[in-house]
Length: 257
Image (cartoon, rainbow, N blue to C red; front, side):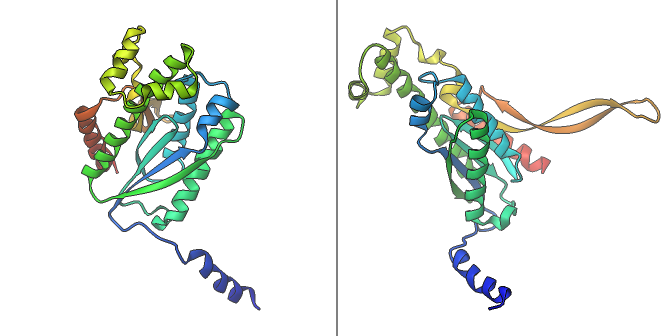
């Protein structure tokens, strides 16, 4: 059988379920670390409940995903997850989900592994959102998850460091309201309000404009060249202020595009 005929016949089987995102929809790709609890607690010596080295690996990975060929408008990372907002008009990979999933998961896994010096893997899923309001709600949801996870993590590791085993610490926290968890920390000298913002609100990434000074080689006149770079924002606002911030970022990104 001629190759062209064989190629055409066999490609049908790998593209039968080749779904593409509808035009005009925003896409938010979320990559999550696979088995990262074991990776950070057993295989590597990261500090509990949070480690700035691990945070920096995640930020670097998020920045890479923002700049690896996708039309990214905003990035967000907390814990072992990264969310990347793609422009609604993006035609990257003709909006095919299998390509977006596999490429972003692969890029994240490769970059994080290279920084860690050991294998690490991410999976990827894509939310398809028809409006800016839903985009904002998505990031409010992930930030609320960050705050909840941070409170639980600080309480859990406080109990572990005070002698409880994993099962007993989890059982003591089960069913406790947020106020009770805050009180638990406060009794041990920890005010949750003073916990670094990146731990409880996550980190945002977005393009910013800067001007590089230079000179005209012909005349010697001072010049400025407009450049774009990824800004890392580790002091995000929260709740309604975060919603306002996100709306402004979306308007700015759309205007710049």
